[in-house]
Image 1 (cartoon, rainbow, N blue to C red):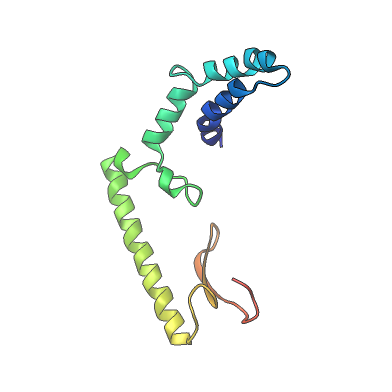
Image 2: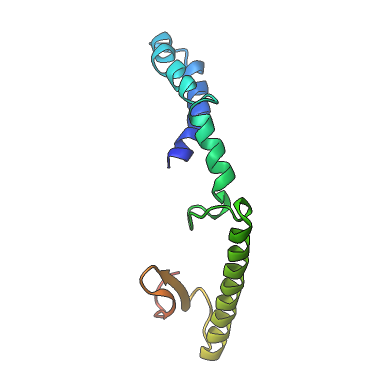
Length: 128
């Protein structure tokens, strides 16, 4: 969340600087200048660069994982994980076909930390 807020700071600063209404000068002095200073390359800019290089931003918000390119071993683990995910997807499709139901709507694939992956057969009236 800090990364998301940090990434929005330039937009907030530009909005504050564009404000021409009452107290515009005060808003610029108190907030725009301070926020601009916090977002420079010595402060939050370094934080953003670290996160962009180390965290796989494409997987957020589903997963928070270190980027597979960060370390060769992580790349291998990610490949194995992708293979297992593909196997799970195949099992899900096979189970739906065997049961004569549709994936996503009637046979749901769910995941919980303490249970792992599991299928849940929903009622026909349940909305997706």
